[in-house]
Length: 163
Image (cartoon, rainbow, N blue to C red):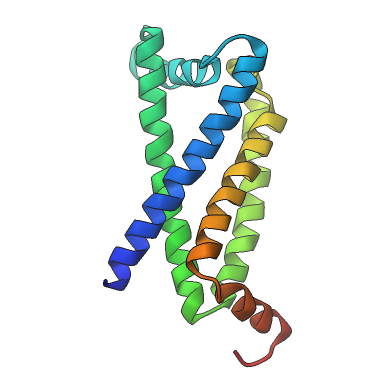
């Protein structure tokens, strides 16, 4: 299998795993609040408001629209993550740079979520932060399994030792 096919396969798989992890996290929170699917419906309505001139879709339409958006975005994130991990197989320092970028992204996402909190109702920055950590852990575990030698190579690069 070519490298590009491996990157695509791993990336889409990682993205689907991350998206599903977040979906399960918010399903649990929604079930505890007694509003199953409340978060994706609320987010679907928020996204739809950008495109539907103030009209809200049905509950099912909001759920389906957001779910499609959510899984698509995570597949793109997974593809980028897969590309970085596969690049780190050749150049371990690429993974170190990605780790810094991940931290910056998380801090930025918390800021954006905090600013937009009023529009998102019950959704808090902490719930989003935990969801992102769960997704990152799930995606990272998958990629770790797919590239078991990478942690040793990154450790060697951090220590300045030859690989």
